[in-house]
Image (cartoon, rainbow, N blue to C red; front, top):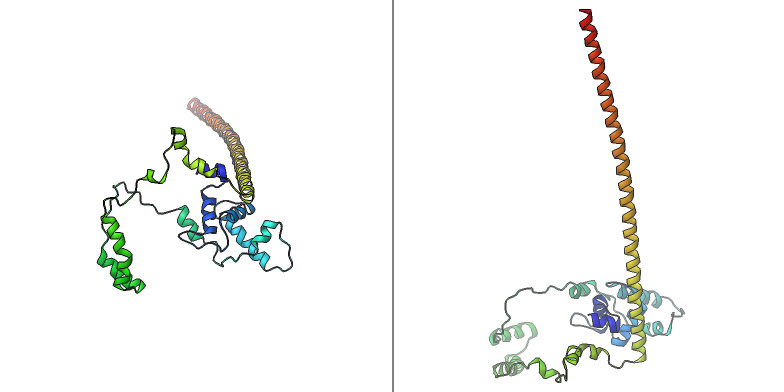
Length: 259
């Protein structure tokens, strides 16, 4: 995530928003929006969490309903040619990625052979497939699973690194690939937005801390005033009590003399 933020200005929430624009396992996205246009949308509508997509959707619907209104810039003019579904953006989809229900079990993972008969029944009930059609998909998979090497090692997908440094920076190097002018401009804006948002959050935090400090000072001053008043009252009470005792003593003395 640190490399994505450094080279593309994408934090976790923005990365999820980009996926929702382009399409994921949970959503089809917006037709005509790929990674570059998605990055441009995020650069035009800043915010945290789902705010960029909510702002984009609100802006789009307002502009579509207004005739003869000139868009603010060429990028936004192009965005008005898109067709955005009424349900976009869906908070449920965002939350499914952001707050994913992940299995935290520490038990070792193990593979087992698929149950062919139950899969045939499932495909028939859910998809209306014949047994022959289901077998056409499943039998090659079972054959592959029964072979000696069912899964290639991870180093099969990467060329051997010449040194340890390059091996540690495979992902970073991939993020440095040559990019188009459009993408570079969108990335530049996203990175600047991230910097501005961080400054704003830091300023807000300092403001809150300053207010809290002032409250604590006022509370401390009030407590001192209250304590001072309590001490004065206590002294007055002590003085009054002492005077009452002296009066009682005098009265007793006078009564004794009279007797």
